[in-house]
Length: 340
Ligand code: SF4
Image (cartoon, rainbow, N blue to C red; front, side):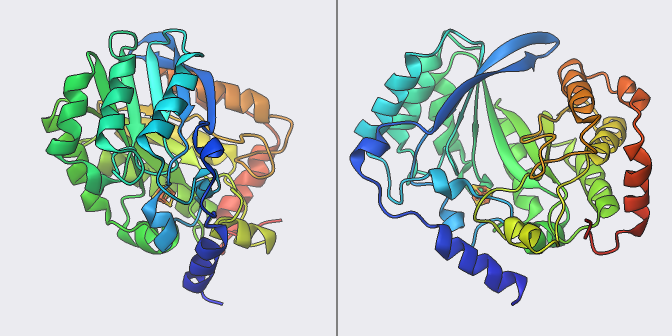
């Protein structure tokens, strides 16, 4: 079976059936996490809305993305979205940084209609200092972003899942529908609209070796830095119903080592220009997430978090563990990215 046919069959199998309205009134998840605004440590309120989900996931989907499991299989009505928001606001404690995600694009009208988008941004205006959402680049247009900019009396920040600036890695290995140039152009449009931009870069897409993955993400940082205000390196974690999971179950994919992330951050810090460089790995230290030997994982993850918050990457050079030698051997001898 070719990777393309695996991708299409995985996309078909994970598509949800249309959900009842009770489910559509409940958001997917909400939590509070540590963040930074400039040099100030702050708490961030994170909300995952339940929407129709990413249209690209229906077409083909990205090889590492399993977010469609949290979607409705149909568009949420404005009333259902309003109810999700009001349930979330009950838990909001004026955290200065607010991040609202859908399992797709906040700016896609099929997921969140324009009036609901404005209502959500306005609900946090005057209470939060920064409001972040994620979208695909084709939806970043002045007529779509402009009303949101006007509705929020603080900093608006838009995250774009660029993943890699290599067109082959992005198009064939990650399976994104748009080339890297569209992401860079969208970031430039955001800057012109006085909106902050954040790039999500993927560490270790499938079909790359461990060392190729580090090189790919460091080069992507360098090529992204002039366009984005912030860059987040996101190591792959294995989500259900994905091509990456299909490979993982067949022993053909290992999530990245934390040592690879440490190196990517250290080298990325040298080429990031004025962009903020961060990484807050999901499922860190777990078998299905970025991990080392198990002994050092918590210590390394804590150092990565501290470096991301403080923007001081020097201390990462002092991390040590016996498993670093094993990782170095992996860099040299894993030509197919296949490891035990
Ligand atoms: S990674 Fe983003 S673009 Fe790709 S399928 Fe998931 S939500 Fe859609």
